[in-house]
Amino acid sequence: MSAKEALEALWSAYQIKRNSTTLSEYMVEFRRQYGDCLKTDFPANPSRSATSPHLIDLPEGFLQVVESYLRECSDDCNTGVTVETVQKAVVAVQVLSILSRNFSNIPFVSTSEAVPLVIVISSAVANQYTQHSKDANDQNTTDF
Image 1 (cartoon, rainbow, N blue to C red):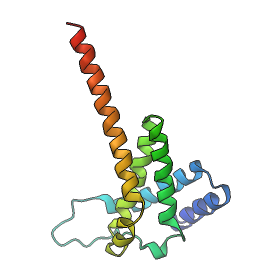
Image 2 (tube, rainbow, N blue to C red; image 1 turned 60 degrees about the vertical axis):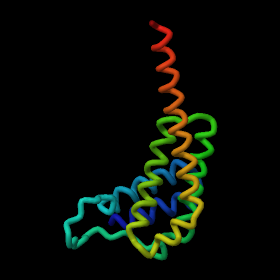
Image 3 (cartoon, helix red, strand yellow; image 1 turned 120 degrees about the horizontal axis):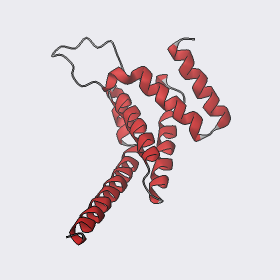
Image 4 (spheres, helix red, strand yellow; image 1 turned 90 degrees about the horizontal axis):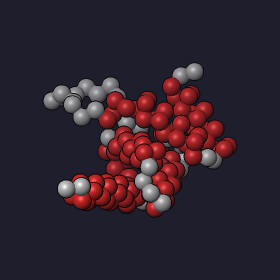
């Protein structure tokens, strides 16, 4: 099975099951296949063998599915940030980064709900980190 066929099979499975586990598998495979687009150490005149896909070449509604994936992560952050939630959000941000490597996709990505959701998730992670740091600092202060 080719890489493209593997992605198509995972997308079909997601369309049938509509669960976050299958979507996570698709997102991880998408990142794996297009991961070279995340590299930023391009030479001065890159002859990029890795090109980011255009949204029209991806399954219909792909960006909206990424948004719903991020919305799920954001909702999970409301009950407390977990390592699993952060890992899912990282994959989603990497998928958005891959999409944004194709300049034609930038207007669609930048005006989607994905960007505000990433900000909400980042804020929740930062707040929890700050709170844990403050709690640890308070604990160290009371030990003296």
